[in-house]
Image (cartoon, one colour):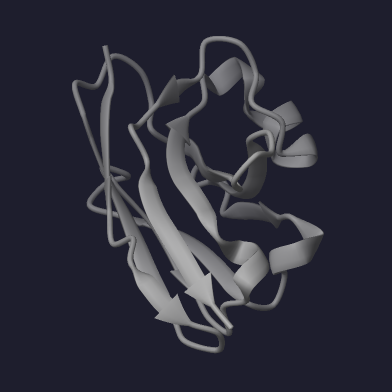
Length: 129
């Protein structure tokens, strides 16, 4: 059973930056394929950024390309999301996730969470104009 703990969420002004972190433990399979999702108020959860550290591939939602950067450290045990030039529409609960290796290729392509994805509890990001 994988445990994921997010941190770094805060309330900021438009144009500021935040860096989210996600600590993974309880390894039962590879952490190579991980990503960030967010759930804006009153909306469904959406994929934001994904990384496959086995080959260095990343993918981003169109709305965050050029502003957000996903990365991993500590042999994949820590996932980061550097968020620059934040906008009010970036407000939401941010979740990190670990995707099973056999689903990784499709997840990288679509940013849609496949079956058997493991989730953290989330960290709140609020951006004021």
